Image (cartoon, rainbow, N blue to C red; front, side, top):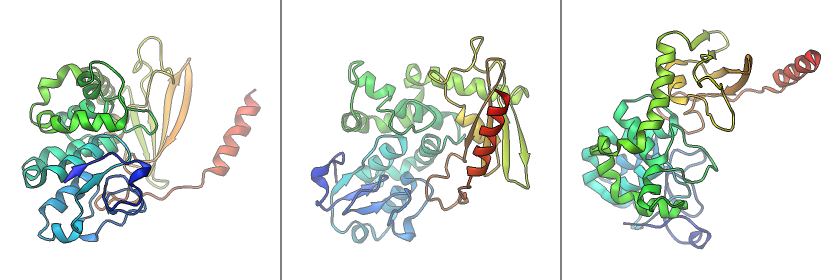
Length: 289
């Protein structure tokens, strides 16, 4: 097996599409619209890849194709590609691979080592579309230079096993982001941040602690929602997150952070029509002005 980051020149070439979904390919992906064989489906592409590697029908399912590709960079993408390239030996790390992939793609609170390993690879506790490569490991290996997604794969794939087995050796790369997650988790533990569940509406109202973002408060250009802490505590199908801003609150609406993917164990979440709610909020804002 060999890996090549997806580009237009591969469109007509037979290939295995791992994690992302690209045209004219055999899919092993949890992205919506995938054509992954039903017997392999799982919540993350990494687990799908592990199922493929363990399958007695592996050769049949891959149709003799040895080109592996993906069209984006994140933890689940890296780990699923690495699993396919590594083959049987990857099965020994199943217990490390799946939680790290879930932490990266779904902001799931799995275990500390898995979350930290994912941070080393993708740079935050959420896969952020169109953010470019913010991987601290890729940047370190590139001599503190910016890299594109294709180069990030080249740099990180040889290091995956080390990151999973010796995560503490990479503390300088995960420490700062982990401390943010830990601070958010602690704010929920002491009740400063809280979740109220509306079981009828399947709505989680999440109020974040005023001191969560320090004395200067929340700044949209600097801060993200504490995805891992929220996903650990919220149980609804829709999250209304109240963020303290300038003596008041700003609000954002999220769905559970896994719900963009096609999942098997985690239940699907129906998208809601929020048109009327948005119109009403705009009315209230105009009235206040």
